[in-house]
Length: 266
Ligand code: MG
Ligand code: MG
Image (cartoon, rainbow, N blue to C red):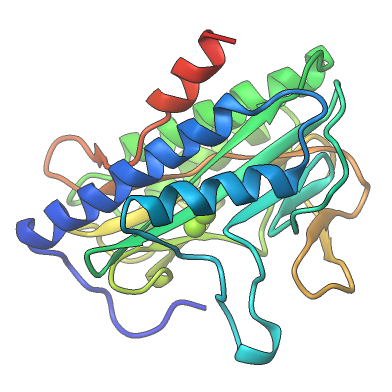
């Protein structure tokens, strides 16, 4: 997946990624405005693509992968037991569902990548707790994204937060570097040992993205070649930010601000 060696970004490059990440955050906000029972994943996908292109960006995911099997949508829309890489369908969302919206924007030569999992209508308390704790684990990981730490410190912080609650931490899919390519080195697993893995240094831009299952950690891929779901078909949550490693505190380039504004005004 990730190729090449670790690329540390200059402040000028980080400024460009920040612009990409801002558009991405706003695109998420536009999607959030439509999020309610009855909306279809295809409607959300169309809105995201339209908004990104209207603002001069390109959806990073559309056409991603080999030419004969490229990802067909602008969003990965993963409902309930789908962990990631779900394909947009015409099936309306129902109260009680959860859905992760994963989106990437390419603008000014740089990608940004971010995901948020929504409860749709009335969702059971155990599933709401999964969403809350998966999001909390993302911020636990981000706290460790400071220079001098290692990738394993991020991984351990995420795993430690969610595994003690009895959740399954997905092993097969991981976070990654972000820049001129959507997926760069290093890989950022959501499980691991403190003090292990590549050294974090200022200017490293990472997508940190815990994928956490209500049940067991095991996942399977559907025959469509994209959709990853839990083996036990229990729900799964996914939250992701693009961040830059700094000396004392990571800077979060993407934002859930527009999503949370939209949800608060519904
Ligand atoms: Mg993503
Ligand atoms: Mg990612």
